Image (cartoon, rainbow, N blue to C red; front, top):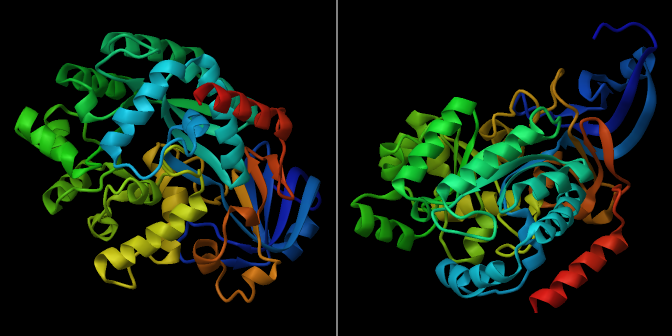
Length: 442
């Protein structure tokens, strides 16, 4: 975009600090960001910005940090309706005794739409502008994300057994691809192939997943190596560990996001690195389900791209990437006995560019660069609880939480202003939906 004096643009934001994420280790002081037609068109000192641009809408944020919108690399949005339904169980019992029976009774298009609306509200309020979702009835999830104006990669779930959504692998894929065609070209909603896990999909289904993903250039989103028991069962059933099985079936590649990856060994990490895979690290869910501590420092030493995920609110019980950043940094330090493991800037990159890169969206979002879409998050540091501030990036990871998020923009459109989420559906309506489903599930 060519500029001259008083160039007309849509949006101009003047924060105290601006952290672009790319390039790394940069914090800009008293810089502004200019946005037009949903894109970042300039980043420049505030004095120059005020002189050069005439904005239709402008924001003075004198005690704020402006960062890219956060990217939640793994969640089950609709499961927000099961927030806190069962605590203090390991993964297998939690799934078998609580989650799967509840889902078999209650999951429906209305359940998914209402739960996803509630999740999108929570994520936007916490500065999350993009999420990578995996659940049933993906068309209804896509509708909810589009209604809230949130960017989403919606998983076309694949299972080897029937559910309320589909009957078998062929049915899951047929229905999912039809939904992908229906939404093709939408500015905020795109799709991934989402086989639930190696243990939940037979070989033939995983091979078909790999072929379709390659043919249509789609990301693959799959749980893998979440627990030791998952690995032992794979050895008993297939004579190999799950990552080796995915390699044999052709799934490992630069489009694959391995979710959790709590228990890979060094050989497997080297393989994931060679294949260009990404990992969705979900530290809070891993802790809550006692799945273990993922070896993130080793992943980073292998130059594996790592993003952060919240998992679903049923196993976390929050969709909060500020919490995930802090826990990722602290767990890496205690797990490796290295206080220098995962510094704050690395945690922030994982929560932004790491997730964007994994989803194939790195050229669009994940950093504040000219030409990228204007997915932005402002965090207020004007409270005694956040004073003093020597390093705003350290504050983002080790001091702040989502309550300090003041403004959020997606594609240049304001979604949160002064801490209030601006949606077509009201807070009272969301509370009524949550109450309705709580009554049904009880």
